[in-house]
Length: 94
Image (cartoon, rainbow, N blue to C red; front, side, top):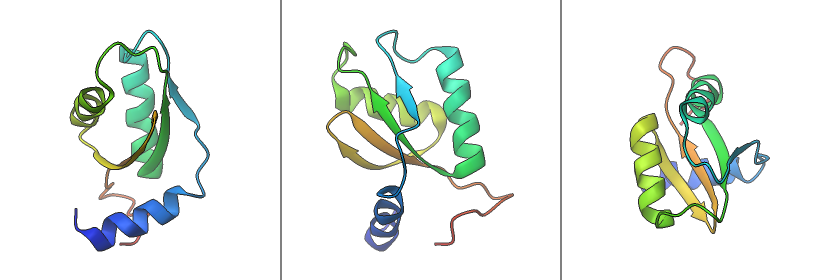
């Protein structure tokens, strides 16, 4: 993702609420399904990660984004913004 695209996505993410949370149980199949469906519907989502996640947060985020086939737009503490293009809907014009 180039810098211009990332900047636009960050500005769009500022208006988003953190509607998704990963709790102390970590990434379960239900959480993956929920986040996958959210990315399909919205393309850009903000996720809060519980501080009790045992893994290194950086490794955790890379693993999560890989499982969801999404790109990490931004990480602020334990809040992350994920983006995945939906070619069928093209919700966000870049």
